[in-house]
Image (cartoon, rainbow, N blue to C red; front, side):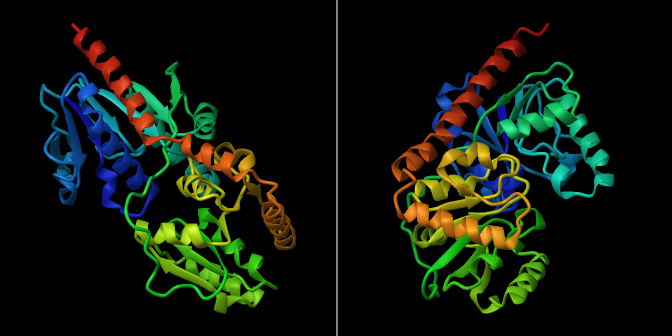
Length: 352
């Protein structure tokens, strides 16, 4: 049996939950290609979500002490690099590493503790996957891989098959949009400066946190607090309405393993403005605009105006941008994971 750990789905509206759901969905669609049974390790609320063609196992707190696998489990795919759910050593483990964001957001005195934790997980794993070249570089620079190779498998583009539904209260006039868990690493507080001396509103969607206070303090400082709206998490249908209808998509994060919303915004052929930190230049390439590394407000405003002007003049090939977004495929992501599982199943059978 191959087990895919979807435990992180207990935190909806996060990148890890999106990763688990999309990989699980595509593993199920391709499960006939797996040379063994597929089992999804899920929070109780998701048991049965993908139908009866696969097996399910419910996450329990006591599993943190000991994950009982049984003789049928041959491969265990841990979808989170700091997982508390570790299979026995007799089981082959695939470990997906999304980021080393703590290097960019935590005080330096905490780096060693996080690195030690990640090192233990790397030591246990049999096959290591990173979701970007940026994350791979961070691993190679900060972790002793003990000769283990690190393979990059990109995340995919989220295709929304439902109806795009406007929010109950639509923005009045033109607006800029950003989305993500409202945490300091997302760097949202630099955005209010962009709408000073404009008629734009700024809308930020995502799980809320006390960091909102910092964002609104900056909005007050810029005199735009009445045009900055932090709206909390939204459904996919509403999120895609905001992306499709915004005047520009903004993502100034200073620490990203991949940046799923960036790919979504490129798919909808919007002007996209990113930071130039960690994985974002790798994902956006030359299809997007980048903010000054130091996020100086005056410089950012100049860059933003210049970028919008270039976009409106057709200096960005939007069809090429969309095709770049389409090059990120969850189906292809799952297919490569299945190839890894099958390789490990063969290795497992050859064990004495």
